[in-house]
Image (cartoon, rainbow, N blue to C red; front, side, top):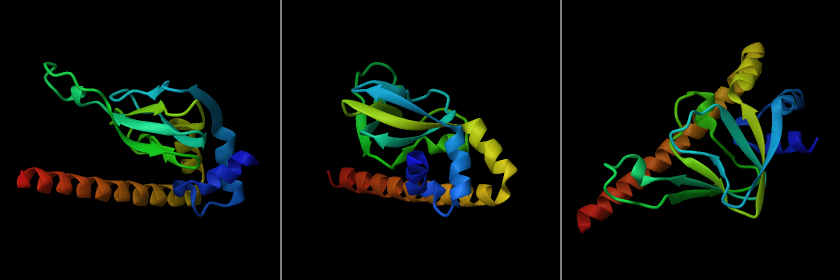
Length: 162
């Protein structure tokens, strides 16, 4: 019951019925990580979606992944996520590689993990649920693209003034 409450708080599951949330809960499994432990690495295959039940998760990018290998940079934390927030949602649309790493940022963090194949099967079996989730997912990803565009613009404007 706790999981269905948390699932109901996740943006991409907004508008789902209690029955739908119970179906999603049935495909979730819980996983706990310790401080600094990697949940997934940048450039690894994306096949799971995560929801934070407790603790914090740091989303990090490593500039070395796009460099020529001559410079050595430390990963940068670009977001800190908390209870009820989700991450890894691009895996639901595209099972390509991860664009960032995720790491446990507190003593422990507990996550609900949803396998892409399991969720896609549920959404294919119930078109109403599929439409709601994919519509919410599109809105969530659009918001993140807009935020990234603003950050790029600010960075370009700042560097142009120097």
